[in-house]
Amino acid sequence: MTKELNITGIKMRDVKSQVIHLERELGEQRDQLRGTGSELETRTKENDHLVSLLEDQEQRIALYEEKEKAI
Image 1 (cartoon, helix red, strand yellow):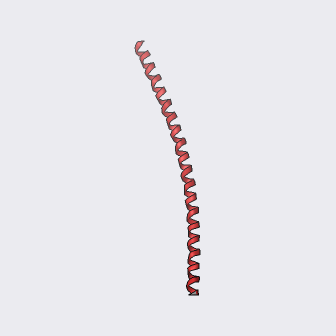
Image 2 (cartoon, helix red, strand yellow):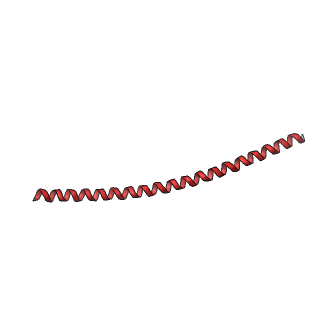
Image 3 (cartoon, helix red, strand yellow):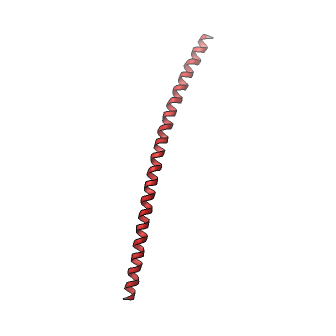
């Protein structure tokens, strides 16, 4: 019975070690996800800004075309 208790104790330590390792990995994955989400938000804002600039340029081109046709 003592042998079984020792084996069970060793197994419990192994499982605890695995749990700690998996918790660390989970924390790292969460950090990476947070960073990726932040980068995505930044890129989305940049893209929105670029789309806005393109729309402004398209309006200017349309205005110049109208002026050119009027001349």
